[in-house]
Amino acid sequence: MGMEQKVQTYFELKQQQKEIEQRLSVLRDEIVGYCEEQGVYETQVGGYTVKTVLQHRKEYDDQKLYASLPDPDIWRLLSKVDSHKLKSLIKLNILTEEQISPACTVKPVTLLQVDKL
Image (cartoon, rainbow, N blue to C red):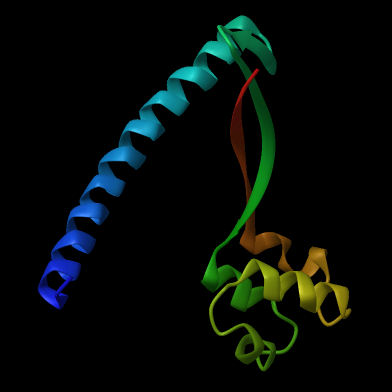
C-alpha cells in the first residue's frame, strides 16, 4: 500500500469515525432517555443488559482557578488546567479543595454500558 493510499484510507476512516460517533451519541441519548423515563438504572432490552451510571465530573475555569491560587508560581506547575495535575497537587498538600472550589463546577455525566446476555 502506497503512502497516498494510506493517507486516503486514514481520511476515509476518520470520516466514518465521525459519522459513527455522531450516530452513537444520538442512540446513547435515546437509550439514556428511555431509562430515565422508566425510572431505572439497569434493565434488559431483548438480549441485552442496559446500565446507566451517573458520574460527576469537575470542570475548571482557568481565570477563576488562577485567582484562587495562594501563590501565582503554582500556576507554572499547572500551565493549563489538568484535573490529574490538580489532584496530585491536592494529594501533596500544595493546594486544598477549598482553595480551588471557586473555579470548579461539577457536571453530571451519565455513562451507558450495554452488554449482550
